Length: 266
Ligand SMILES: NC(=O)c1ccc[n+]([C@@H]2O[C@H](COP(=O)([O-])OP(=O)(O)OC[C@H]3O[C@@H](n4cnc5c(N)ncnc54)[C@H](O)[C@@H]3O)[C@@H](O)[C@H]2O)c1
Image 1 (cartoon, rainbow, N blue to C red):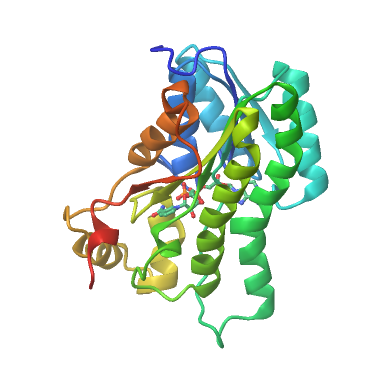
Image 2: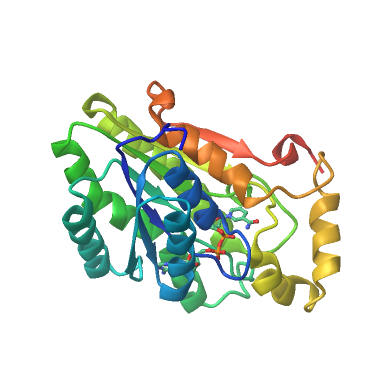
């Protein structure tokens, strides 16, 4: 272990993965553990989080799995209590849960809109609401939220609630950062572009290209100045920096991980 997060305890939400391979939360949990953090891995899918725990433990790290739906406030309170029980403190909160649903301003149902807001924005508010008092008592902490370039530019697919929620998440993170700046608590956002995580095979191809995975990959790759999608490790390394003390003077900002996508006009 290289020790960039030595002695830290990190809650990682969505620490599993939607399918085989590396999702953003899974890679981040494993990378944080490699750097010395003890991981409190939260996921609605116990089997997915268990895979992450097994990898961490095989590599000699420490990880506890906690099954929960992070959109439920009671469950979030229980996550905080269980993490404190297991590890005694919370130094890093990594809010990774999220994902898009197709639909435009008139075609999306109110139910889908509300679920998207819960899935991409409201759970981050709930986690912050219950973790910030713990970090305040500890005189410090780091929060890293996972947004998306869909929150700052058009990315080629109609998923209006996702775009709106991720944009709001970026702004939410800045306001939390300002409120807690003098209390030693930093809050930043990683903004991934088009990443080739298991989600592409598990769901996006169904929603966007009638199940044609190769067509979806080709269209995603074609949009990117670097010529290809990133992967979960690109997101994880950005999160690692923001979570670590190396970023001790970095708050209220974002790291965009997108192969140049947001700099492009078309
Ligand atoms: N993959 C991409 O191209 C991409 C691009 C930009 C942003 N992102 C963002 O990265 C984050 C993670 O993406 P991913 O591709 O790794 O996703 P993923 O779907 O592979 O992993 C998410 C994990 O979260 C869990 N989860 C889902 N809902 C939950 C809930 N309510 N409570 C607890 N756990 C829950 C799932 O079981 C899964 O294990 C999301 O916020 C997503 O919006 C992804």
